[in-house]
Image (cartoon, rainbow, N blue to C red; front, side, top):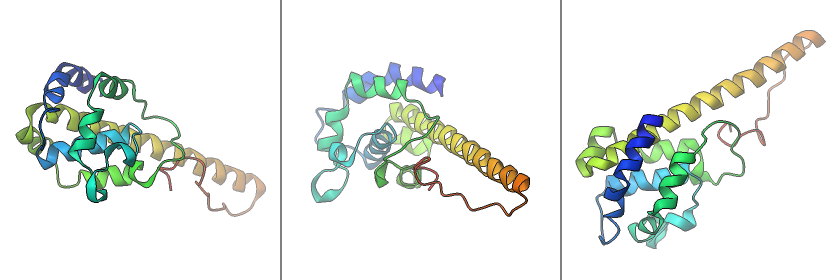
Length: 163
C-alpha cells in the first residue's frame, strides 16, 4: 500500500491537470469517486445532476488535501456511521467492471490510484474479517465456559463494514 502512496504523491500533478476539463472518461470518474467514498467523503461531495457522480463535483475535491487524506488513510479498525455509499461493498461494486489495465488506458496515473484503492480495500477486508473472527471466537469460548450454545453476534455498532 505504501508503494502506491508514493506513486500517488508523484502523480498528483496529473490529476490536478484534469481540473480544467469539462468531461473525463468514465473510469477516471469511477476511481476518483470510489476513492473519495473510501476516504470518507459523502455524496454531497461527489454527486452531480441526476443524483449520479458528477465530474463538476469530483474535480472540486482534487487538491493537495485530497491526496494528503489518501496518504494518511488508516484502513484498520472500526468505521462507524458510514453512509451506504461509503461502505466497502458499495465501493467494490463501483469498481466491479474495472481493473488496473483499464484504469491505465483511461489515464496512466489512474493506474496508481486504482491499485492504491484495490490494495486498501484488500487490507480493509482482511482487517474486518480478522476482527469479526476474534469476536466470534470470543463468543465461542464464552459459550463453551458457560456450557451453552454460542449466540449469533449482532455486529451493529461494531463496524459498519461488518453488517
